[in-house]
Image (cartoon, rainbow, N blue to C red; front, top):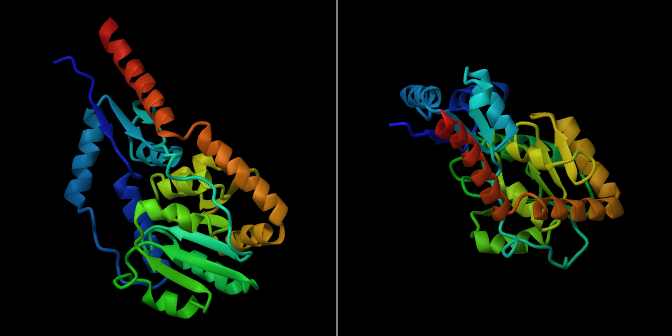
Length: 278
Protein backbone atom coordinates (compact mmCIF):
# COMPACT_ATOMS: atom_id res chain seq x y z
CA UNK A 1 0.00 0.00 0.00
CA UNK A 2 3.02 2.28 -0.23
CA UNK A 3 3.33 2.80 3.51
CA UNK A 4 6.65 3.07 5.33
CA UNK A 5 6.84 0.44 8.07
CA UNK A 6 8.86 1.04 11.24
CA UNK A 7 9.48 -1.39 14.11
CA UNK A 8 10.06 0.38 17.44
CA UNK A 9 12.33 -1.87 19.51
CA UNK A 10 13.26 -0.91 23.09
CA UNK A 11 15.97 -3.43 23.98
CA UNK A 12 19.06 -5.02 22.55
CA UNK A 13 18.39 -7.74 20.00
CA UNK A 14 16.77 -10.45 22.12
CA UNK A 15 19.02 -13.18 20.74
CA UNK A 16 22.15 -11.25 21.74
CA UNK A 17 20.73 -10.41 25.15
CA UNK A 18 19.83 -14.04 25.85
CA UNK A 19 23.32 -15.14 24.86
CA UNK A 20 24.91 -12.56 27.19
CA UNK A 21 22.73 -13.66 30.10
CA UNK A 22 23.47 -17.33 29.51
CA UNK A 23 27.20 -16.60 29.54
CA UNK A 24 26.77 -14.63 32.75
CA UNK A 25 24.91 -17.47 34.46
CA UNK A 26 27.74 -19.86 33.61
CA UNK A 27 30.33 -17.38 34.83
CA UNK A 28 28.72 -17.15 38.27
CA UNK A 29 27.63 -20.80 38.42
CA UNK A 30 23.97 -19.78 38.55
CA UNK A 31 20.92 -21.79 37.46
CA UNK A 32 20.29 -21.56 33.70
CA UNK A 33 18.60 -18.35 32.61
CA UNK A 34 14.93 -18.98 31.73
CA UNK A 35 14.51 -18.97 27.97
CA UNK A 36 12.48 -15.81 27.66
CA UNK A 37 11.52 -14.67 25.20
CA UNK A 38 11.17 -18.11 23.60
CA UNK A 39 12.98 -18.88 20.39
CA UNK A 40 9.88 -18.63 18.22
CA UNK A 41 9.25 -15.08 19.45
CA UNK A 42 12.83 -14.05 18.77
CA UNK A 43 12.49 -15.51 15.27
CA UNK A 44 9.26 -13.56 14.76
CA UNK A 45 11.00 -10.34 15.81
CA UNK A 46 13.83 -11.07 13.40
CA UNK A 47 11.29 -11.52 10.58
CA UNK A 48 9.72 -8.18 11.51
CA UNK A 49 13.09 -6.43 11.49
CA UNK A 50 13.87 -7.84 8.07
CA UNK A 51 10.43 -7.02 6.61
CA UNK A 52 10.25 -3.46 7.94
CA UNK A 53 11.68 -0.46 6.15
CA UNK A 54 13.31 0.75 9.37
CA UNK A 55 13.92 -0.31 12.96
CA UNK A 56 13.93 2.40 15.63
CA UNK A 57 16.09 1.75 18.71
CA UNK A 58 17.19 3.75 21.77
CA UNK A 59 20.97 3.55 21.62
CA UNK A 60 24.13 2.76 19.71
CA UNK A 61 24.51 -0.42 21.78
CA UNK A 62 21.09 -1.64 20.68
CA UNK A 63 21.77 -0.72 17.06
CA UNK A 64 25.03 -2.66 17.09
CA UNK A 65 23.28 -5.85 18.24
CA UNK A 66 20.74 -5.64 15.44
CA UNK A 67 23.47 -5.12 12.86
CA UNK A 68 25.38 -8.07 14.34
CA UNK A 69 22.30 -10.22 13.69
CA UNK A 70 22.14 -9.27 10.02
CA UNK A 71 19.91 -6.19 9.94
CA UNK A 72 21.35 -3.69 7.43
CA UNK A 73 22.89 -0.71 9.19
CA UNK A 74 21.04 1.82 7.03
CA UNK A 75 17.70 0.48 8.31
CA UNK A 76 18.51 1.02 12.00
CA UNK A 77 17.71 4.46 13.40
CA UNK A 78 18.57 5.69 16.91
CA UNK A 79 16.46 7.98 19.09
CA UNK A 80 17.29 7.99 22.82
CA UNK A 81 14.41 8.58 25.25
CA UNK A 82 13.94 11.67 27.36
CA UNK A 83 13.57 12.63 30.99
CA UNK A 84 10.91 14.86 32.54
CA UNK A 85 12.83 17.75 34.10
CA UNK A 86 9.79 18.72 36.16
CA UNK A 87 10.08 15.40 38.00
CA UNK A 88 13.86 14.99 38.15
CA UNK A 89 16.04 17.83 39.44
CA UNK A 90 18.83 18.36 42.00
CA UNK A 91 17.95 18.47 45.69
CA UNK A 92 19.95 19.45 48.76
CA UNK A 93 21.74 16.63 50.59
CA UNK A 94 20.95 15.98 54.26
CA UNK A 95 24.31 14.37 55.10
CA UNK A 96 27.83 13.74 53.87
CA UNK A 97 27.64 10.00 53.26
CA UNK A 98 29.14 8.79 49.99
CA UNK A 99 26.08 6.99 48.69
CA UNK A 100 25.89 4.87 45.53
CA UNK A 101 22.51 4.16 43.97
CA UNK A 102 21.52 1.65 41.32
CA UNK A 103 17.91 1.52 40.16
CA UNK A 104 16.51 -1.54 38.39
CA UNK A 105 15.50 -5.10 39.06
CA UNK A 106 17.63 -7.20 41.40
CA UNK A 107 18.77 -9.47 38.61
CA UNK A 108 21.73 -10.87 36.76
CA UNK A 109 20.88 -8.68 33.78
CA UNK A 110 21.33 -5.48 35.80
CA UNK A 111 24.83 -6.50 36.91
CA UNK A 112 23.94 -6.36 40.60
CA UNK A 113 26.61 -9.00 41.25
CA UNK A 114 29.43 -6.78 40.04
CA UNK A 115 28.41 -3.66 41.93
CA UNK A 116 27.97 -5.70 45.11
CA UNK A 117 31.43 -7.20 44.75
CA UNK A 118 33.04 -3.86 43.95
CA UNK A 119 31.50 -2.16 46.98
CA UNK A 120 32.39 -5.04 49.29
CA UNK A 121 36.02 -5.04 48.19
CA UNK A 122 36.43 -1.26 48.42
CA UNK A 123 35.40 -1.13 52.11
CA UNK A 124 34.88 2.63 51.97
CA UNK A 125 34.33 4.41 55.29
CA UNK A 126 31.17 6.51 55.53
CA UNK A 127 29.69 4.96 52.39
CA UNK A 128 26.47 3.15 51.49
CA UNK A 129 25.13 1.22 48.53
CA UNK A 130 21.43 1.46 47.69
CA UNK A 131 19.65 -0.89 45.30
CA UNK A 132 16.21 0.35 44.24
CA UNK A 133 13.99 -2.12 42.42
CA UNK A 134 11.91 -5.25 42.73
CA UNK A 135 13.01 -8.87 42.60
CA UNK A 136 15.05 -9.49 45.74
CA UNK A 137 12.89 -12.39 46.94
CA UNK A 138 13.02 -14.31 43.67
CA UNK A 139 16.44 -13.36 42.29
CA UNK A 140 18.93 -16.01 41.19
CA UNK A 141 21.60 -14.01 43.01
CA UNK A 142 20.75 -15.06 46.57
CA UNK A 143 24.11 -16.78 47.11
CA UNK A 144 26.00 -13.86 45.60
CA UNK A 145 24.12 -11.38 47.77
CA UNK A 146 24.80 -13.45 50.88
CA UNK A 147 28.49 -13.51 49.98
CA UNK A 148 28.98 -9.77 49.39
CA UNK A 149 26.22 -8.03 51.34
CA UNK A 150 27.53 -5.94 54.20
CA UNK A 151 25.85 -3.78 56.80
CA UNK A 152 25.95 -0.71 54.55
CA UNK A 153 24.16 -2.34 51.60
CA UNK A 154 20.44 -1.57 51.40
CA UNK A 155 17.76 -3.05 49.16
CA UNK A 156 14.99 -0.46 49.00
CA UNK A 157 12.52 -2.49 46.94
CA UNK A 158 10.29 -1.05 44.22
CA UNK A 159 9.73 2.71 44.51
CA UNK A 160 7.14 4.88 42.77
CA UNK A 161 8.61 7.05 40.03
CA UNK A 162 7.56 10.25 41.79
CA UNK A 163 9.65 9.29 44.83
CA UNK A 164 12.86 8.56 42.95
CA UNK A 165 13.91 12.21 42.93
CA UNK A 166 14.11 12.13 46.73
CA UNK A 167 16.36 9.05 46.66
CA UNK A 168 18.63 10.51 44.00
CA UNK A 169 18.84 13.65 46.12
CA UNK A 170 20.44 11.66 48.96
CA UNK A 171 23.06 10.01 46.72
CA UNK A 172 26.49 10.84 45.35
CA UNK A 173 26.71 8.72 42.20
CA UNK A 174 24.38 6.61 40.08
CA UNK A 175 25.53 3.27 38.71
CA UNK A 176 24.00 0.95 36.13
CA UNK A 177 26.29 -2.06 35.74
CA UNK A 178 23.99 -3.99 33.39
CA UNK A 179 25.03 -6.95 31.31
CA UNK A 180 22.41 -5.97 28.72
CA UNK A 181 20.29 -2.82 28.67
CA UNK A 182 18.79 -1.19 25.60
CA UNK A 183 18.98 2.19 27.30
CA UNK A 184 18.38 2.55 31.05
CA UNK A 185 16.15 5.56 31.63
CA UNK A 186 17.17 5.62 35.29
CA UNK A 187 20.56 6.92 34.13
CA UNK A 188 18.97 9.92 32.43
CA UNK A 189 16.83 10.53 35.52
CA UNK A 190 19.80 10.40 37.88
CA UNK A 191 21.87 12.68 35.67
CA UNK A 192 18.99 15.16 35.54
CA UNK A 193 19.16 15.13 39.35
CA UNK A 194 22.81 16.16 39.19
CA UNK A 195 24.49 12.80 39.76
CA UNK A 196 27.53 11.64 37.81
CA UNK A 197 26.86 8.22 36.30
CA UNK A 198 28.97 5.10 36.03
CA UNK A 199 27.57 2.70 33.45
CA UNK A 200 28.77 -0.41 31.70
CA UNK A 201 29.42 -0.36 27.99
CA UNK A 202 26.45 -2.72 27.55
CA UNK A 203 24.09 0.03 28.77
CA UNK A 204 22.54 2.09 26.00
CA UNK A 205 22.60 5.20 28.18
CA UNK A 206 26.38 5.13 27.83
CA UNK A 207 25.60 7.37 24.84
CA UNK A 208 24.89 10.13 27.39
CA UNK A 209 28.09 9.65 29.34
CA UNK A 210 31.21 11.59 28.38
CA UNK A 211 33.94 9.62 30.10
CA UNK A 212 35.62 11.72 32.78
CA UNK A 213 33.32 14.72 32.28
CA UNK A 214 29.85 13.73 33.49
CA UNK A 215 30.54 10.14 34.46
CA UNK A 216 32.42 7.03 33.40
CA UNK A 217 31.83 4.12 31.04
CA UNK A 218 33.35 0.85 32.26
CA UNK A 219 33.66 -2.55 30.59
CA UNK A 220 30.72 -4.80 31.40
CA UNK A 221 31.58 -7.30 34.12
CA UNK A 222 34.82 -5.57 35.10
CA UNK A 223 34.90 -5.25 38.89
CA UNK A 224 38.32 -3.60 38.97
CA UNK A 225 37.20 -0.81 36.66
CA UNK A 226 34.07 -0.24 38.74
CA UNK A 227 36.20 -0.02 41.88
CA UNK A 228 38.68 2.35 40.27
CA UNK A 229 36.04 4.86 39.20
CA UNK A 230 33.96 4.65 42.36
CA UNK A 231 37.12 5.28 44.38
CA UNK A 232 38.01 8.23 42.17
CA UNK A 233 34.65 9.87 42.85
CA UNK A 234 34.89 9.03 46.55
CA UNK A 235 38.30 10.69 46.85
CA UNK A 236 37.47 13.77 44.75
CA UNK A 237 34.30 15.44 46.06
CA UNK A 238 34.92 18.72 44.24
CA UNK A 239 35.32 16.97 40.90
CA UNK A 240 32.32 14.78 41.73
CA UNK A 241 30.17 17.88 42.17
CA UNK A 242 31.42 19.35 38.89
CA UNK A 243 30.71 16.11 37.06
CA UNK A 244 27.23 16.05 38.58
CA UNK A 245 26.55 19.55 37.25
CA UNK A 246 27.82 18.46 33.84
CA UNK A 247 25.50 15.44 34.00
CA UNK A 248 22.57 17.76 34.67
CA UNK A 249 23.52 19.92 31.68
CA UNK A 250 23.70 16.82 29.47
CA UNK A 251 20.16 15.85 30.44
CA UNK A 252 18.86 19.37 29.86
CA UNK A 253 20.47 19.78 26.46
CA UNK A 254 19.46 16.82 24.34
CA UNK A 255 17.66 14.33 26.56
CA UNK A 256 14.27 15.87 27.33
CA UNK A 257 11.03 14.46 25.94
CA UNK A 258 10.83 17.52 23.69
CA UNK A 259 14.22 16.57 22.25
CA UNK A 260 12.97 13.02 21.75
CA UNK A 261 9.88 14.30 19.89
CA UNK A 262 11.93 16.62 17.68
CA UNK A 263 14.29 13.80 16.74
CA UNK A 264 11.41 11.42 16.08
CA UNK A 265 9.71 13.92 13.79
CA UNK A 266 12.95 14.47 11.88
CA UNK A 267 13.55 10.72 11.55
CA UNK A 268 10.01 10.02 10.34
CA UNK A 269 10.24 12.87 7.85
CA UNK A 270 13.49 11.46 6.51
CA UNK A 271 12.04 7.96 6.34
CA UNK A 272 9.04 9.04 4.31
CA UNK A 273 10.78 11.57 2.08
CA UNK A 274 12.20 8.93 -0.24
CA UNK A 275 8.85 7.16 -0.54
CA UNK A 276 7.02 10.38 -1.50
CA UNK A 277 9.47 11.15 -4.30
CA UNK A 278 9.63 7.60 -5.64
